[in-house]
Length: 336
Image 1 (tube, helix red, strand yellow):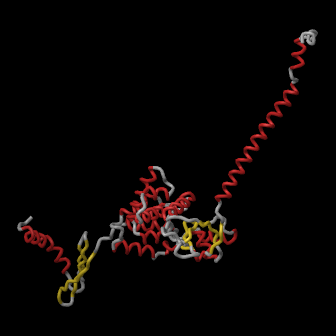
Image 2 (image 1 turned 30 degrees about the horizontal axis):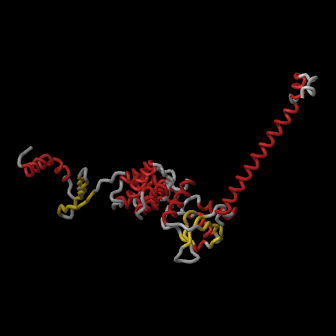
Image 3 (image 1 turned 90 degrees about the vertical axis):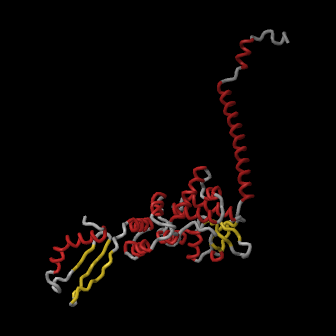
């Protein structure tokens, strides 16, 4: 070995062994390319795995007869067709088709029939248009149905405050826990559970028929609904309040108002103080003359026909101090 490398300069050998910059660049590029290919293969494998899982768990979208689908056993919306945007919604489906499927579950006691979990507006639009409705069919328990129903509406921000309130109250009346109701409304946090109490308290204070007359009122929040509830006793309008509301509903302002404006009309009507009650009676003065006496909480008004008994009014006014003193003596036993 010594004879082989006896005449070799170690410094020259080191220079020859050192790779050229161009060689270094080629090696670096090659290394990066290999790593990039490795990552690409890993990504493709992960994507294939994800797609496989989706295909395995995928649910087929089917077309169903909308007349064989009944609404959820829990109503989450007020009248669908009274919403001012519903007509445009129907036209959109007529022109562009139904883009999102509804979710239904089969009814075991009625083969070929289903119950909708969410998508009531899409279902109603397809019923009006007399076309099949696209749907996902899934086996759901009652609790799973209401949770699916509530979460879909909560995520799409479709329910107004009062619709959420009546949805929560209906679930409460059917025995569901606050935790389940909270989850159905997409509010799993502790504040959400406390919020359920606010919803059910408001819904318990306002008559359902009044709410349905007003509509969803999307711009009206909790404070105004609570204010309206405080004006109503035992969730029933008294006769005077009912007369006021019926009077408002008969006006052209009500007919031309949207849901938010109808709420304002009702609130204003119920906040207006009652007009003082008045009673009128007639007192015969003899010889065909009749005086009219009108009583109210604030005053008593006596009307004497001057032509029938001329001068009686002046005489009575002159005698009023004496009559008042006599009244005090009779009622209090002394002249005061």
